[in-house]
Image (cartoon, rainbow, N blue to C red; front, side):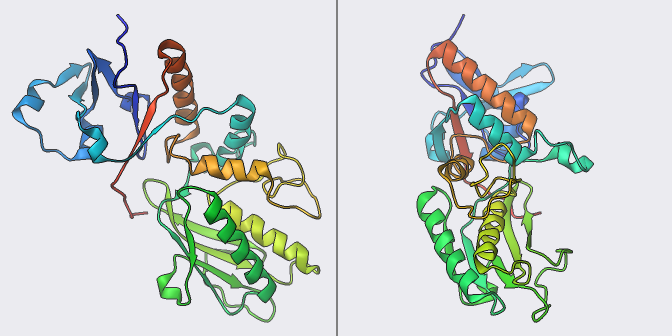
Length: 304
């Protein structure tokens, strides 16, 4: 018998979420696996809680708290998108339509900034690049929910360093950037949350200053989600791999970035899980007329 979902269907957002972590519904009560419950709410249970545990195969299911609204950081309805947008998004985040270059490409996860981005510009950065990047970053911060970008004057207060590297300035703030061209190196934790970035800008890589500015913006945009460039977007797009002299941030670029930072999807997932969740969301809506709800917990992990 189908249960009328007054509670709705819930998904928990954390590292390594899979179909097995999806909350089960029984007689109007939501349940989740014991391991998932502990990660969200700890391991303290009352006697009444333990009496309501359910064994399902090898799993122990625990009643989801009735007051889950108080324990969750954000509780948001699933954000539906059309199939064309999702295919482009999956290519940018997961390289879905690119032949894997290395084994790790098959295990890519969605990465994003959870903490505020605090940018420090080294003195070696070209003045025009610095000015335009600050304007660009400020605009994105204002337009995209959950993406806050500020600027600091001291490197020790930063988690994002932009520095110049060329024939006159050959000091690298990040030795793991092997290239001498425009590039970045990011660090992320076990929840796929980016917490540090070094962006290298080589002023010698372009003769035209406008081209250097555009490439700097492309690198910066890519560092906000470890994004891949794609041929599925028009050549004018910053996220397009196709050549075009006067690229700029397009409405599609901005929509992709907004979606990436939306709470209406689970964070930190791999491609398989991402696709499974969307299929389940569509099925849930067709069967119940209601969208799934995503719960994004307060806790965070800073270990890479």
